[in-house]
Image (tube, rainbow, N blue to C red; front, side):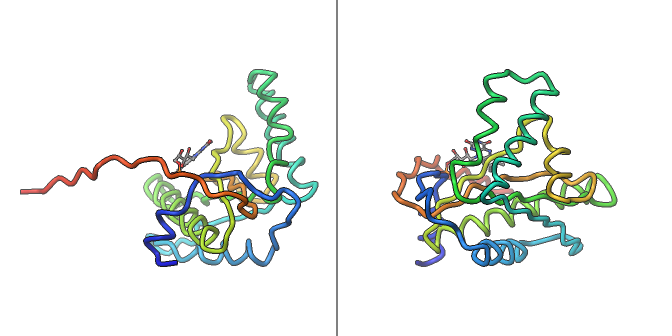
Length: 181
Ligand SMILES: Cc1cc2nc3c(=O)[nH]c(=O)nc-3n(C[C@H](O)[C@H](O)[C@H](O)COP(=O)(O)O)c2cc1C
């Protein structure tokens, strides 16, 4: 696929073969490609952790406990415990803190750019991917579970699995290009 085609084909999707594992080496490739994203000051902020097998329930449990301690709705908390069993793998991507608020923000931007690299690489390999946010109040618990340093922002929980269906693309709005006079 050309790069344009990959960009237009990538969809947020969890339509995967639940019984077909995603090889860990393949996930490592996605992480390696993520690290080719632009990164101001070359701070190398990307942090990765993988949840597969029983680790998925561990991840869901830690997030659910954090949500419960913040008084989240019990039904949502209960759903969260099994949420990460929906795909064979979840890749957690963190952005390490910088030495100033500006650098911390830039690290997050670089991490987000890295996530997109990983999503595109996943698409090209036939994997479905789904970028989920870290639920409110669970950031520090997830970062600790993943072994990330304190202050790391959890940028994405990326569900991964072998795609079973293609998903229609939502329309994009027309480009708004302002010309600076
Ligand atoms: C920073 C970020 C956080 C996101 N968090 C969630 C999320 O928590 N739950 C969710 O359903 N989708 C989440 N998404 C995915 C968007 O909902 C999705 O990209 C959007 O619906 C457009 O669909 P597409 O990716 O197929 O074009 C997130 C995307 C980004 C960039």
